[in-house]
Image (cartoon, rainbow, N blue to C red; front, side):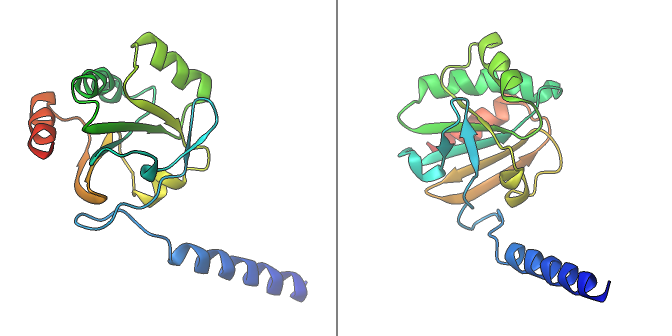
Length: 161
């Protein structure tokens, strides 16, 4: 029994030490990496995209504000494709549900991603949905929690293009 407690304590300590050095999203600091996959199962990184302005939106199917925002962002990206990329990350719903959202709203210009391990959500300290991060030149410019008027978000994005 004593050996079991020792091994358990050792493993728990190693887990905490491994998590301690992990990068977290902070305003004015470099954006942490995401750990998510596209709907084809391929890993996606922020560095995969050349656009200077990157938007990360954390969403789920049951969030009305999230679902309302995605088509608006899709249209915005369509009009500014060479300047902005939007990554919509979901760790709640199954890949099939995410794909049905993509099809239902004809989302062709934003990238919907699945975060199976919930790691991106942890790195970005997401606790409410939608949560939107605006990243310019690799630096977190803004974190917006919850529903937001589209016009104010659109004006903010236009000012950063």
